Length: 493
Image 1 (cartoon, rainbow, N blue to C red):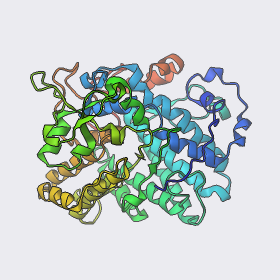
Image 2 (image 1 turned 45 degrees about the vertical axis):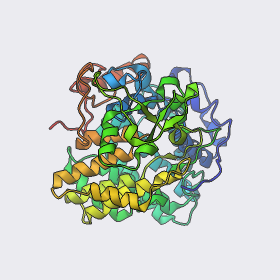
Image 3 (image 1 turned 30 degrees about the vertical axis):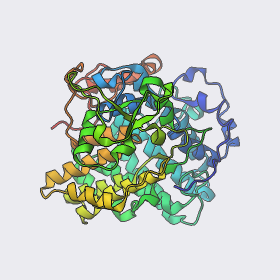
Image 4 (image 1 turned 135 degrees about the horizontal axis):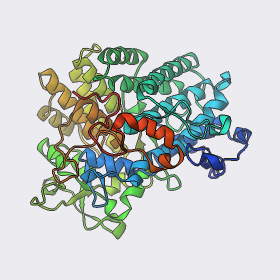
């Protein structure tokens, strides 16, 4: 999480990256050799930076709405309406330019032992990005993704999510081994750890833990095995291991664009506000504040007393919402972005202990996750500090319960609380994985059921029709939020 200078070039990939996506392939007429003039370090740096500078409409319009973090009158996710624009932003911005940069970096480093750690880091981050894509959309182009320039594959096939997850395990194992074998070699273009191979190894192991724990419903034996393996490899153990992107005015945090866009300076949801008020959660005045108007209209904070906060309610008879996301903390161009929080790792480990997958102290891991997540907020603008006394009081009021299922519920409610703003798509996946927190669907919505898989972008039907329709067959055959549309690991009970 070191605050290192960007190694990215302002002109990088204007002619190359835009033309190497998985859409509009027919218009590509570029020399594949042209990409070799860009260093692998610059390519990795570009991918890491753009992961959190991209359009975050999917993350907020759908994931924050589904997970009842917030509400905007602009969001179609509140009423579970499928809309191509917000549904496709994650796809469009991760396939290009993020994955394109990674694919080229991997091609350039895979046979170069002097760049073994850069090769491993690029593979790890590729898994990180693809897990977000496949968990959101289900089957996606994976094995043929990025082959337009090198092999002229313009209409990539969709891979089954089960096979994609199997590949994740292979990729992470190989990358962890490479990092272990080249522990003194610097990762070029690293925006997180000043090039530390040891830190990237922890990140790879932590991602392997997350991959494994996704499988608790579909393959609990494999979930247990991967959790054991990941912990043995050495996962994150503190906030100092977190991958944090230090943003700038030139490369602004993507949340800034959302919050500054009129009504998308969203209200917090009643579900979130009530949970935090009832728990006396000291994070609430950091997450939200009452504004005179949206910040795009010059709004300023008029009240930061959590007792006065009113969240958005599905019930029209309830009071109107008053509390919005705290833009002075989360909505600045320079707000650091927490790509993968240590707290999430601690909570996954705690759950794995409760399920009997690994040995350890679930209460200690739960306590560590809560404590360090609250402490991590001091890294954000205005340095909002939660004292040790406040943390202790919160843990006293909200301890890990005695019964196993209650423990899992509490751990994953904390996972949800920790994920506000930074990782809505991961919290959406974790909710589908565990069922926690228990959320009541919007009774005024179209389906009155929270969707469990995102629709595919319309551009895929225009440019890759046969392959997208083949993938769609297992999701009810229609590109809608229907009851059959569930990703592979989200096995129905």
